[in-house]
Structure formats: C-alpha cells, structure tokens
Image: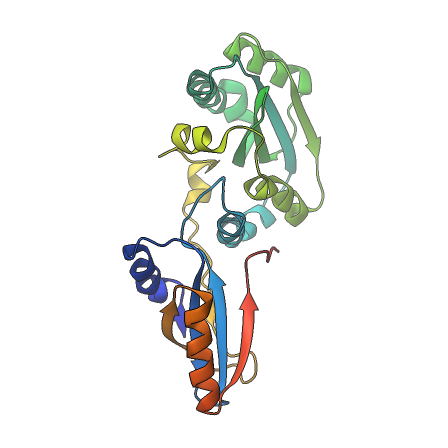
Length: 256
C-alpha cells in the first residue's frame, strides 16, 4: 500500500513549483476502475492553514493515543502565564518557566508522564497538559508555578476518566486558531514546538496511513499532481474517457 511517506515526493514536486495550496492528488484503482481526486495542502502553516492544523492533529493523535490510553491516573493540568505585551520576551520567559516547572522536585515526584500544548492568547500564554498523576494538590502546584514565574498563579488540575476525550481536548488547541497576529506568531515560534511531551512518550512512532480503494479495499496508485482545479478537471475527464468512475475526497475539514 502507498503510505504518506511514499507520496511525499509528489508534495515536494508541488512545493518546487512555488505553489503551496491547493494541490490535487489523483489516484486510481485499476481493479474496479475508480479514480479519486484528493484536495491537499502542503504549506504546513501551524497558524494560518485550517487544513494543515487538521493534518497535524491527526498525526499527533495517531502518535499519542495508545500511550495516553495507558495512563493509570489521567488528569488535565492548565498553567497560565501572564503576558507583558512583548510576545518575543513573553514566549522566551514562558519557555524558561515551563522547563523549570517540569524539572521541579514536586513535578518529578508526582508526574509519571505528560503531554502539553501551548496556546497563545491576547493577555496570556497557556500550557494545556494531560498528565499521568496519582494526585498533586492544587495549592502546591499554584505555589510552585508562582515561585517560578514570579507573577502568575492561575492553575487548574482536574481528574478525568475518558482518556481519549482528554487527549482530544488537549490536542484540540492544535486545531484552534489564534486572535494574535498570525505573522508574528509564525516568526516567534519558528523552530519551536507547540506540542511537547516527556521522553518516554516521544519514543512512540507515528501511526501509518495507507491509501486504499473505498470500493474493493486494494491499494491505489497516485497517477499525478494537479496544481489548479482546471488541470485536475482535465485529468478527471481523461480518466472518465478511459472508463473510470471518478469520486472526490476532501480532507480539508476532517477531524477525529
């Protein structure tokens, strides 16, 4: 079967032409004479592109869902960092505070594994955690966070039973847009991860994805990339002339 990794060369071909979106992949199944057109995007913007945020959500879901299902005592933890107004300085100080927090004695004693997503708002920066934790008193978390940051004391921790629901909630911030200047966010977070986890979780490999025919279940082959809707129409018309039934797949707003 043809996996995402195997068709990466088609995405690179599109990028080499200086066009990021939209692009259309055309697949066909020789067995049952069905052709599929798939609208995709290869810009990989974490803040501007709704499709690429959804693509990142699905990749992270496949990477972490089995690990989180193994958490014995799952809980949601949120840390809030007050912004001063300069986003560059705020993110720099926030990252220093997060590093000190996860290395603190209390965190190491109470937390067995964690995953968190960074959210930037107009007045605050949030770290949304899902943790494996028997329990950690709210007052102690608040004291630790305020001591590290020097000014922020807003924290929240709550026990959860639905592990998949908790992961969906945390990773939902990957899908969420921001009310902060997008271009500024792209520059500030260039080379920085919005999703971070403990070392034991990072060892889990990402989920594989295969392109298969929806009619017969056999593997389908990518026959080319079209840059515009007009070009893909020409390909579809040719395949119809060859006797193929053509179907359109749109993954731009598909979420778990």
